[in-house]
Length: 527
Image (cartoon, rainbow, N blue to C red; front, side, top):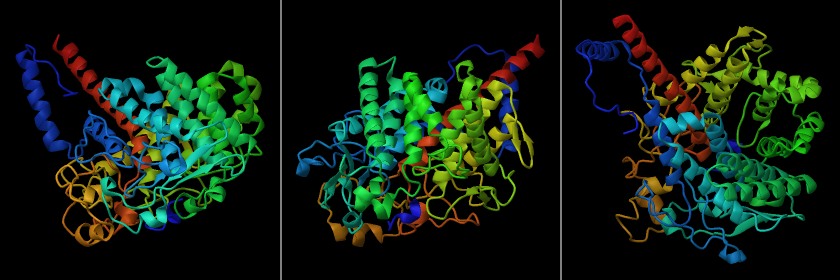
């Protein structure tokens, strides 16, 4: 978990002849909005900005259609030392190591968001950008999976990387690559990468069937590899221990991979795996109140809950009910409706608070899972039974929205923690590339120590805005210090923003539906 790390035109309505009374009503609504809605958020803008962030995190050869113009090519010799092409993929945060586990989780969550809310993302005009963000990751995973039982786990070394403060275009640090194989297993990494590729394969099935099939082939091989040669990847790749140690072990990732492979293939063998391993792998044993790049149980439990309504799964309803019970423990803990002190802590202003280092990752993941479960309850006409009472789907969605609105500025600091969104947001994000003058503007080499002397220690705002990045966020008392050295609060990660893509699209759709309903009601009243 994060404590382990050492440091570290889409909403345009065409012109038309609008009746005078509607023009007046629109003006009236606009005035009312100005005076009565101090916290109206543009979820469409937030969605668009969130997708820009992934372009800022790209490693490799930057494409011609890159929108984040202050970035350029980097890491073009990755894997060369080991005789393999590992160019591409994502930097996880403000440094330049390519860590396989959080990168794969980022892609899984982007894919899950697009699977759940693809139509809403498309309606917002952002589906192509979402698919590009996913494919940038899966293209890299295809490269990294060089044979059935070999997966390259990491490029770069966190320790040496943290000695330098350089733009990715200037990197002088080690680009040594590390792998897992049958002699050095990593079931958690293999499982998460399989999950990412299986989930992505669902999305590409109609638009790029060949690519979808290729992803599925890799996902199935990786799952078989991870299941046959079991072990934690941080035991095989020791350099990752201080940064992304697999504290939860590998059993959750194997269940998670089987879940996504079942959804991608409808092959009953994967479903049987989820059922048969439910107890021994902790799927129906662990009551968890966090969901993250390391701990997947809540996600597995929520997906398993959805099978209860399918006739072909009735014979396993007893196991699936136990999965749902654990899923509801997670939801109730977020809603502060569990007993025995098993709720997620909150700040005075109501933000979920799990731990002091990069807390916003838990908030964005919770917002996504709550939104998905709210939809599930609405679609099945069910309610949630918590120890502290019965909850309907609207209450769950309202709470998820409150967390998103806090992120966007409804908080004591009156600050958006999504960089580039709104009038006030973090200006000194802990991010090497954003904090140093763009390579496009100044191609002069900036050395390892020079970056620390001239840029890291500089108290002025970053010269490049890391648009769409979700920073670590405030402390337990809702306080936030916008300083580059304050990495616990000002560093952003790809897996922070990834779950928000689907949620922003869902909330935008709801807002648009409200506007349409209000407009239709006005028309009915007028005639």
